[in-house]
Image (cartoon, rainbow, N blue to C red; front, side):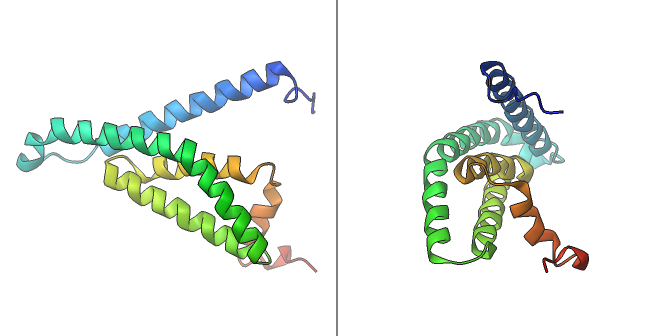
Length: 150
């Protein structure tokens, strides 16, 4: 049952609160997963400096991705959509960007899911109001043949 609350000020506050809660939760989850490696004699000495390095890299990654990255992703998606036909190029770009962000998150010292989550936020803003079926159907069509369009 749709009460059309998302278009109201209350709906905007609720959605903003939920997004902030998710962002903080995923940040903490990524940091905790990144700290769960087994310490050895050589890594025990570097724990303080690596924690500071991880914190700096994570803050920079989030700040750059959610500001400049959001703008660059929107520009790149517009460029890809104007010069290609179909959704394959856009999906390929999204998957490559997500994997690159996951790799950087692992390099920074947090879990890969954190990098993918942050880039997914930026991609979601860049795509605007894309229906979910436009993204899901091309992914599951090769897997489930009965979903192929006629």
